[in-house]
View 1 (tube, one colour):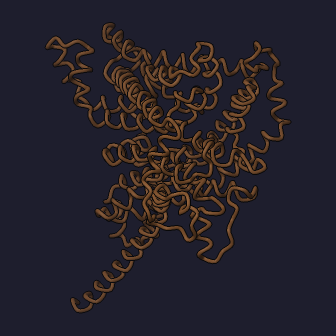
View 2: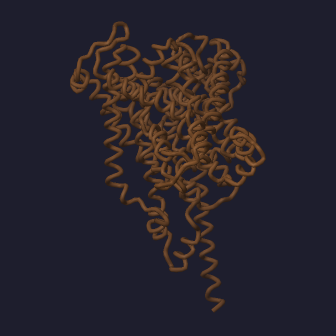
View 3: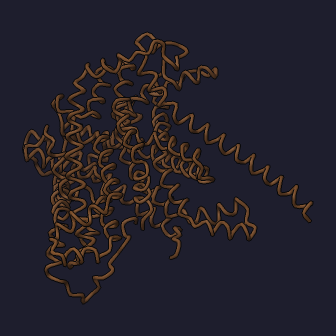
Length: 288
Length: 307
């Protein structure tokens, strides 16, 4: 018996090993294909004007032309774009995470008539294609005199930010036991105090997820600034890069340097908080 | 569909509410209630009105009834942009789902450290800001010095005018969109990792082969996730804008004139607010109709574990 199963087991194991080799071969090949554009972007950003047209292209530029980065940043007021984007990111974070967590707390921990209906109503806004709202919102903001200011990009965020984040916070807050809040109330803690001093400190995972998603959303936003911002000095990085492309359409070494500068912060945030990133994405797709 | 999680646990009919608690509840949720009215309901109503007017922003609006909708159906460019958008969606969405699902299956074979690194590499392209992505792909697809034509040249193939040939430009943008399939893949992977391993072990004991396990366990259990990804990708794909705007400017010969790009031009370049608003409503109803059709015909095949 034993002598008969042994070779069968061995051949199975051999087969499994061959499968494994194939699996990794296919996956590594795919990874190489997918990362090549990043490599291309980086090497292009380090070539001088003569080398960028060379055939065959050099993968390791010789000489390394770091000046491209300083030049690209100086051709356009990129320091202003950086500052502007940072302002939008910081204010956007406070507005979105602050108001979405407050609303999520309200939906999670208080009973009031029509709660589920109102919650569903707020969530229904997520289903609406943004494009239908684009023109009326533009006209409303124009009427308010907010064109070429950051108000249209920021003010709506103070109203619950994005219904998706309200949903996210509500789901998380529901897992915090009511007894904890009750006990704090017994001790004379106010409703805002319970939210701020008991619930929020327990909610780091969901806070991190919301902060990351808000960051990426604001950083990457193109259509918003494109429609509302006209003055060059008020532009964001995304908008600045788009115009940079318009002006320096063929100076690919400078354009790639600027693209690297715009891309790297998002990658840094991703690597710093991968776990929350993946959790957040999985959550958005899988609950319910 | 993803939104119905939770549900009413305590607030049943005939339930009496603590007045103080209810008041505080309203205070806490008031921002989003106000926001929904201010930034969704009011604009929606305004959008209905605007779509019935001739409004260039320079003069006050004049009501024109359904004129915008009528001329919209006669606008050759609206037809063209719709065609471009539908072709893009029909090609890019299934391609994206298929590649993402297949890759997720492969990545799910083991949870080793190497696998994790590979997974991260697959996801990275989805993180590139859309504008940087557009700039990068303009360069990759450059007909003279771009990487892709260089690769073709090393293989002895003729160069392709990716962005200059009206028959090819849209395909180039479809390939480009596939680069970001990692976003869909991550959702698939999370779904696959949520399938209880006991199911596979039980099937293995019953002598089920790997193909059997894939078609009888994995795919049926993944239908909610497949369905979710399909709907989300479809809706997003009908609203693509950045690539057409930045890489090809709708050209050559309007071959990449996406619907939203045409809408954007009408609204913010020609300042035809009424007309653009009518276009937005048409898109809205197309997306709504498609979503309903998808729910109607595929929704019932969705299998929920435990229900």
